[in-house]
Amino acid sequence: MRLITSIAEMENFSRQARAASESLALVPTMGALHEGHLSLVRQAKRQCDLVVVSIFVNPAQFAPGEDLARYPRNLEQDLELLGPYNVGAAFAPSAAEMYPAGYETFVEPGAVAVLLEGAARPGHFRGVASVALKLFNIVKPNLAYFGQKDFQQAQVIRRLLEDLNLDVRLVICPTVREPDGLARSSRNAYLRPEERAAAPLLYRSLRRAEELAQTGETDAPKLLEEMRKVFADEPRAQLEYAAIVDPTRFQPVERVTSGCVALIAAQIGPARLIDNLILGPPGVSPETLLQLALTAGSMAATQVRVPGLEAEALRLRIENCRDCAALTSIWLPPRQFLTRYLKRDYPDLNAVRVAVIGRDAPGATENFLYHAPENVNRFVTGLYELLGVKDFAEFKTRFVLADAIRCHATRLHVPEKALANCAKHLNAELKLFPNLKTIVVLGEDAYRQFQEFVLGRTPAAIRPLGDLLKEQGWAREDVSIPALGERRIQAFYCFHPTFVYTRSPSIAAMLA
Ligand code: AMP
Image (tube, rainbow, N blue to C red; front, top):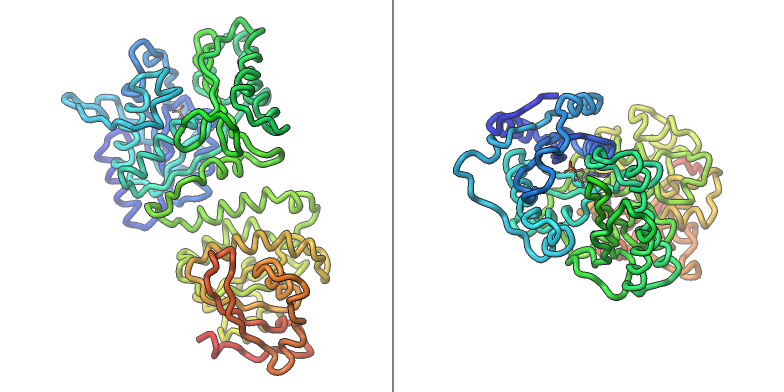
């Protein structure tokens, strides 16, 4: 890891990184690193080739009288904590480097920055937006990582990126908490033991709102009243505000819906602490809740495509599939496929025109095509023959193998419910390839799954595969796929390549 303190050197480093077409991540922090920061670093490492962590206590975001002077600073320890993550660089400029004499330009955020933290800390978001823009210009990241912990800040950044047409994609990561619920924060270090013991009440108060919302209470003032009650018996804590807002405009709501955010700020002894929770249905993961809160308004137009990121979002969805988690044995490894193989074998997801849906080597993960591309088994031999390619290297230039029954198949026969569950992933996986024109469906299980759960046909409307393929061993149909926004796709149905009785002839010519 390089420690960089000058802007010129940082710019140079980034220029080289981008010339080598590496995806570059920026994780902006004010140092005094803890698990919350490190979770952003880990996420950035998973999704990008190169990660830059900035460490800068930004004077511009502290109002007069705030804790700028005593804010914890420990660069040596921060670098030590970053050590195991193999990040490319830590960028730790001085205040004079960032704001030299004569500096006078600032970014003024809009309505999203007015209430809550904006009202409590005049000029705070102006300082945040200004330093963020400077960092984006200096580091030139493809992606920037922010924590949900500072939800309003993340929304200010989101607007900044959108309004000023910055080509940086924002990733927001869930809040990391202590075991008792207290959100990790550099400012927790200010707390004396008895104040630390009281501090989890911010989280308790948020949880109270969540609990009520999940039992069907939609009246925001009622939820807020209950949140305030949690503070009534704790003299060490002074509630500053409790609010429930819609996640994009940051305006208070009267009626709570899924995706609304409950936010809280309180003074506990010398520390001013903030926290928030996204309100949503019970049992939903923090990542999904974030998606829920963030899906309003599209950022897509200004964002770079980073294959790893799409795969990562999908990985999260798969990991959050409760049925998958409940299975003790998962035959095929969706996680590895998506995070490792997909990124390795398909650096440009736009280039893939044909997806092949079919089950590969059930029960024998070591034979799975992406695990062992050099492996020659009955499935891959048949697959290559069918598609007219000679090996995996050629296969991956045009085709991707999307697994029909990725995680629920534990036997040769695949139950209906498993087909339905995996179809969720299958639909999501198909979306990763925006230029898909053709889908080749291999075998009976994949055919039924495709017809019912991808095309949305009723079982009664599905022709038996055997009838369909009787004459020539394959069939073609032009279909529109709801998950792809009703896009027209040509589908080829074939027998499974290991189905010995009636092999489909090669469809290579039709795919040319
Ligand atoms: P800070 O150093 O406090 O400015 O935080 C730097 C980044 O880390 C911001 O994007 C924060 O939202 C994020 N962050 C801080 N605490 C946490 C936490 N407990 N969980 C997740 N992200 C956090």
